[in-house]
Length: 125
Image 1 (spheres, rainbow, N blue to C red):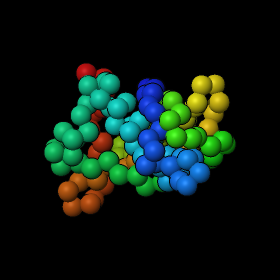
Image 2 (cartoon, rainbow, N blue to C red; image 1 turned 180 degrees about the horizontal axis):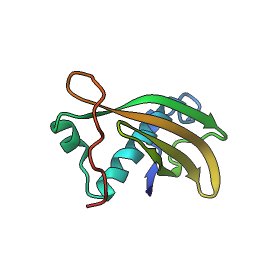
Image 3 (cartoon, one colour; image 1 turned 30 degrees about the vertical axis):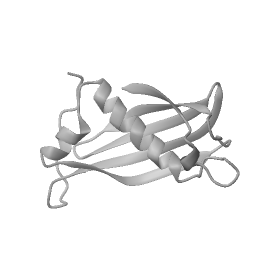
Image 4 (cartoon, one colour; image 1 turned 45 degrees about the vertical axis):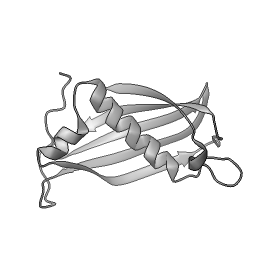
């Protein structure tokens, strides 16, 4: 499963030099995951309302080049692996053909008590 989302860098996401602050890339990855689920017919809010939480347990990020205020970026989110209670995603953020950032995350599914729970069926609907 792979999904791409285009967005523009907002001013408040930048530092004093109008460069994207490194922590904001985590928000871009989150947006990519949520929109990927939406694109295949799953609502993240509905997953949480059913008593399951999808939480980040690991995030590995490599920064290659900076992004600036008002840049048009594309975050591509790809599911690499799905297990019973965990899944791994890969992210790539590009400005045009230039790779700016890449990352891999591990997402775990927890129940309302914080215990590992089986992932819901996230097949396209």
